[in-house]
Structures are given as structure tokens and as C-alpha cells.
Length: 380
Length: 226
Image (cartoon, rainbow over all chains, first blue to last red):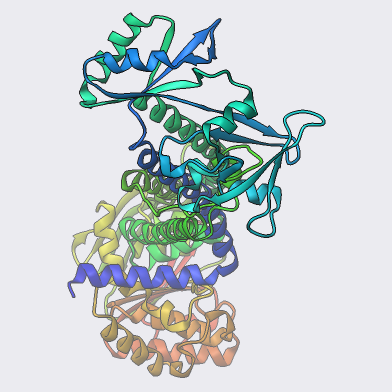
């Protein structure tokens, strides 16, 4: 071992012994610090993972969605529009879709009702396929229980639940209900030939902008929404929610910084005396600062690791029970799903820098001021 | 030889509470001797000792150690001198509470980067020589007055400093412990170390083995006795 390493070891030994002397105070400090990191890291892990999941789901979504706009609002679209869109060069297929929302007054939840495109997913007449959130919201105790839907006072429609989606896709399908076209038109009283919107797939994703331009020129009353628009909206939504939590945590950080600065700026007489003793027995300013760096490093790195690991377990093992309502959305039906562990290295590094560096800086400056004086002055 | 020439020391210089602790001190302190600075409280003994031990700089004047001027040295050189040349026993011993006796004794050796096991062994030897080996792992706040003093002496000796400085070492000790301390000082002297102490305790300056006594009053030297 080189003298430098031996010196570092001796300083670290002293720091550990010194920290152990004020066990209660230091544990409280690390705990407060770790809670701040925990809140920030939880928000970060959760949002990063949601963004990843959303991107994965949207990867298979159609490139372009066409909506009819009447008086600034989305209106039902004629199925013939799909044929016109299909004629645009570069469009592989264009299909009209039927989907809408249903407000379930019994549980106060909104369901997304769709007619599936995939023939295998089309349920029998009088049956529906539901997301995992709907039986949960309704409190179904056994499989095979019929689903009664009421559109208005005195109305009751009975559907059999053919099956429920797995929770792997719950972020997108939790509140989803699939019907066949006849049941859908009957349930929502939609005339034949009219649809909710039209979706188009494009051979070459680079041509999406050109196709949207051509389509907009040919059908000026239609709005063209691209997959990247939707993805961007989702990303912004999750960014916004993460930001909300980060803003809450920022208040925590601010409180912590004030706490750290207060602790650091007002070195107690005991600490000043200790620095004086160390200097008198032959430590120089660099030794004292190196020792305090060890102390700050051990406290902040320890708290950072504790906060991050707890946040990781909180988000990925326990499903973020503390922050899920904010991060997943305000709804009656919360998706029930396990997030795929995903850690953004750059974000984690930023978090580390934002939490470790200010703490060390806040504690180091006053130490340097005290330690750079003569030991005799320090001790008076 | 440690030589002080026209040394003055001002505290809070330029402020309303300015105090002149030393007024033009000229003094020679012999190596390989026991020197006692005596005088009442506020006479400047501790300030003079701090300047000799490179813990404070004189406001004016010059201090030389074995012919080398040390009063104008930058901080890192003064630190080097404190590490290698001086061992300091403070008035209230100034051990760090919460740490064990051996951790306190090993403190001056930490920045030198010596081998941990060797330093620990040396610390245990110093403690054994002062009858403290069995208290090595005890937190210092549980030591008696005499044990605390001996722990402080062991710490002053850990880097094998040739000059041991002690500020009012017997201020809080009874006669038996004072006699014990004087035995230790004589033993150090026999090992060839220079000992410089401050005291207003006649048991110290009248003790056998003391080579020189310097009397101070109001920041000035009042008399020197061999």
C-alpha cells in the first residue's frame, strides 16, 4: 500500500470513528437525505419506465390517425374516407375504426370501448373482452359473471365477459372493453357507415410527413395525427407528472440544503475545537479537508445509495404504491401491472451530482475557513 | 537552541478588543533541557508556548529553531514541524471525546501515511510505557485525570518528536499525580528530549531536573533562573 493510500485509510478510519460518535445525529441526517433521494429517484425510475413501456406499446400503433373535425370538435367520419386515404401513394392500408368512451355510473369509471381490428379478438354477439381493471372496478368475485351496462336511467344491457386481458399490457388495456361492430353500433346508436376515425399504415415511416401533407390537401376538413404526435403527448404527460413529483421533491431538497448549510455554516464550538486539536497535533488544512471529504462522501453517498436502492425496490418490486396515483394518472381504474426495470444512467448520474455535490460543497466551505487558520486561533 | 528575538503578539489586531499578549520577547531556550515558563494567568505563557511550537505566528519578531528561521514559514512547513518536531500536551489535554485512547494517540500519525499496524504497535508501546496499555480501547471520557494526562503525553510522543511542549500540565492534578508527571518528564529528558512547560505551580518550577525557569508578567519576561 502506498503512503497516499495508507493516509487515506487512516483518514477514513478516523472519519468512521468520528461519525460513530454522533450516531443518532448522523443516522437522522442520512435518513432525511435518503428520503429526498428516494422521492426523486422513485419519480425518475417510474417515469423512465413508463416512457419505455409507452414507446414499446406505440411501436405497433398505426402511423397515421385521421379524424373528422366539425366546429373544432371530433365528429364521426364517413367510412369512404378510408378508401380515399388508401389511394394516397405510400399508404399500405387505411381502415376505419369504431371506438368510444363509456362512463360506468355504478363505479364512476370511464371505459374505452373498441371494435377490434384483429378478427381473433372480435367477441361473440352479446359478449365483451375486458381489460383487467374492469372486473376489478366492478368487484367481480368469479369468472363468468355477466357485465351489466346502463347508458341512462332505466336502461340495462347485459354482456357476457368472454375473457380479460393479461396485466402485461395493463397500462394501455386496463380500462379497455372490446365489442363486435353490431353490438357497438347498437350500444352507442351509431348509424351504419359512420366511424370514430380512420387509421392508416405507411410503408416507409420517412414518408409520413409527405402523406399527411397530401392527405391534408385532399381532405382539408380532416385532422391527421401521427404516431410520433401521440408518443410525444404521452412522453410530455409522463414528463409533466414526473415534474410534479420532482417539484415536490425540490421543496424537500431546498429544505435539506438549508439544513445542510445551517449545519455546515454554524460549526459548533466542539467541531471548531476538534479541528484546532487536529491541526495542533500535526494535521494540515488539506488533511482536515480530506477527512471532511470522507465524511461528506460517506454521508452523501451512503444516503444516495440507500435512497436509490429503496426507490428501485419501491418502484420495480412493489409497484410504487406511494406515488402511483400521481404518476399513473387520476382515475378510478388504475392499471395493475409490473414495470419493467429500466434505469436511465444519465438521469441517475444527474441525480447523484445534484444531491452529493451540493452537500459536500455546503459542508466543506466553512470547514476550509476554520481549518485554514492557525491552530492556536482555532482553539481560542 | 530555540531563539526568540523581539517577539510580539497581538490578538484582534486593529479591532477595539485588541490585546497585546507578548511585548518584545527576547529569549533563548536550550535543547536537551527542561525549561519552565512561569507566571500568573494572562502573563503570556501559553501564547509564547504556541509561538515556540509553531501553532501561532508572532505579529512581529523572529523565531529560530536550531538556527533556522521558522516564524515566517508557510503553513504547510509549520504543519510539517508540528508533526515531526513538536509533541504537544495541552492544558486541558484536548483529547477528542468519543474516540478511544489508542485512536487519540494515533491521531498525529494519520496524515503521515505510516503502516497502520506499525503505528498501532508504537501507540501501544507508548501507552504501555505510561501504564495505560489496558485502557487502550476505552473511550477517553472514562479516564481519570491522571490517565487522561498520560494519554495526552502518549499522543505527544507518537511521532517521536524531539521537543515536548506541555501547557499547564499539572493544573488539575493532585500532588501524587504531579510527582508522577515529573517522573515521566525526567524520563523523557533522559531519553534526550527537550521539554518546555508552562506552569504557575511551584511544585513544577522547584522540581528536581528543571534546567531553566523563565518568569513572565504582562506579556514580558520578568526574570530567568537557571
